[in-house]
Image (cartoon, rainbow, N blue to C red; front, top):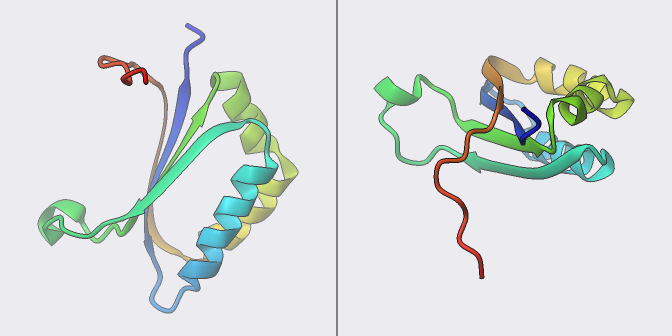
Length: 108
């Protein structure tokens, strides 16, 4: 079972949090840590509050495998950034999971 491994984080930032700075910090982190294969993020724009439960941002990192994810989690830059990130968050959901692809990406 050596397929891709995903790290999904949903957050609601605290009122007054420096979101732009945190997003820049996140982008710097993933560009500096070799273990991260890809990184995507987005901001909630149209889901009903009943379903979004106040979460405003989603972050998805892809790793080659679970070992690469473990290397990321233990990386000093991740440890350092986590403290800043955690301080700005009101609520969070985090899921780490092996990816099961049921529809392959189209080839160009």
